[in-house]
Image 1 (cartoon, rainbow, N blue to C red):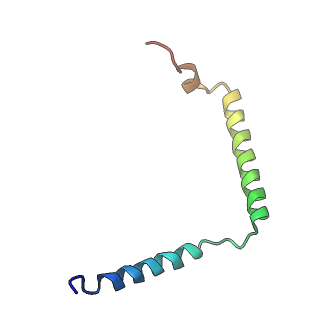
Image 2: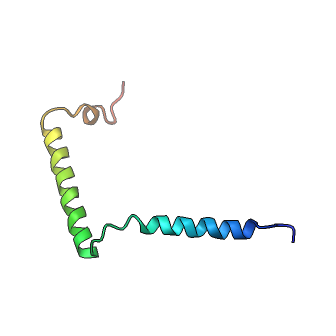
Image 3: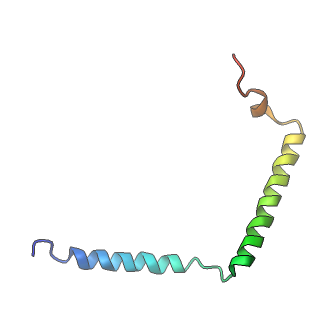
Amino acid sequence: MTRGNQRERDRERAQARKAGAKGRDDGLTPEQRRERDKKALEEKKAKKAQVGSDGAGGAAENKGGKK
Protein backbone atom coordinates (compact mmCIF):
# COMPACT_ATOMS: atom_id res chain seq x y z
CA MET A 1 0.00 0.00 0.00
CA THR A 2 1.79 3.07 -1.21
CA ARG A 3 -0.60 5.72 0.05
CA GLY A 4 -0.03 5.05 3.72
CA ASN A 5 -2.61 6.63 5.95
CA GLN A 6 -3.60 9.38 3.51
CA ARG A 7 -7.11 7.99 3.03
CA GLU A 8 -7.71 7.86 6.76
CA ARG A 9 -6.48 11.42 7.21
CA ASP A 10 -8.68 12.63 4.36
CA ARG A 11 -11.72 10.96 5.90
CA GLU A 12 -10.98 12.56 9.28
CA ARG A 13 -10.62 15.98 7.67
CA ALA A 14 -13.89 15.53 5.77
CA GLN A 15 -15.70 14.60 8.99
CA ALA A 16 -14.25 17.65 10.72
CA ARG A 17 -15.49 19.91 7.91
CA LYS A 18 -18.98 18.41 8.08
CA ALA A 19 -19.15 18.94 11.83
CA GLY A 20 -18.15 22.59 11.41
CA ALA A 21 -20.89 23.22 8.87
CA LYS A 22 -23.57 22.04 11.28
CA GLY A 23 -22.38 24.53 13.88
CA ARG A 24 -23.63 27.42 11.75
CA ASP A 25 -27.28 26.38 12.21
CA ASP A 26 -29.27 29.27 13.65
CA GLY A 27 -32.16 27.14 14.92
CA LEU A 28 -34.74 28.74 12.63
CA THR A 29 -37.31 26.97 10.51
CA PRO A 30 -37.13 27.57 6.76
CA GLU A 31 -40.16 29.88 6.97
CA GLN A 32 -38.56 31.96 9.71
CA ARG A 33 -35.33 32.14 7.75
CA ARG A 34 -37.20 33.33 4.64
CA GLU A 35 -38.97 36.04 6.62
CA ARG A 36 -35.69 37.19 8.18
CA ASP A 37 -33.96 37.32 4.80
CA LYS A 38 -36.92 39.07 3.18
CA LYS A 39 -36.91 41.76 5.86
CA ALA A 40 -33.15 42.29 5.53
CA LEU A 41 -33.44 42.57 1.74
CA GLU A 42 -36.25 45.12 1.99
CA GLU A 43 -34.20 47.21 4.42
CA LYS A 44 -31.23 47.06 2.08
CA LYS A 45 -33.35 48.15 -0.90
CA ALA A 46 -34.88 51.02 1.09
CA LYS A 47 -31.44 52.21 2.19
CA LYS A 48 -30.13 52.06 -1.38
CA ALA A 49 -33.16 53.95 -2.71
CA GLN A 50 -32.70 56.60 -0.05
CA VAL A 51 -29.02 57.07 -0.91
CA GLY A 52 -29.87 57.25 -4.62
CA SER A 53 -32.55 59.90 -4.10
CA ASP A 54 -30.17 62.12 -2.11
CA GLY A 55 -28.36 63.07 -5.31
CA ALA A 56 -25.24 61.08 -4.52
CA GLY A 57 -25.48 59.00 -7.69
CA GLY A 58 -22.04 59.78 -9.05
CA ALA A 59 -21.50 56.31 -10.46
CA ALA A 60 -24.88 56.28 -12.21
CA GLU A 61 -24.16 59.58 -13.98
CA ASN A 62 -20.92 58.29 -15.52
CA LYS A 63 -22.40 55.07 -16.83
CA GLY A 64 -21.81 54.48 -20.52
CA GLY A 65 -20.59 57.96 -21.31
CA LYS A 66 -17.54 58.82 -23.39
CA LYS A 67 -14.70 60.74 -21.83
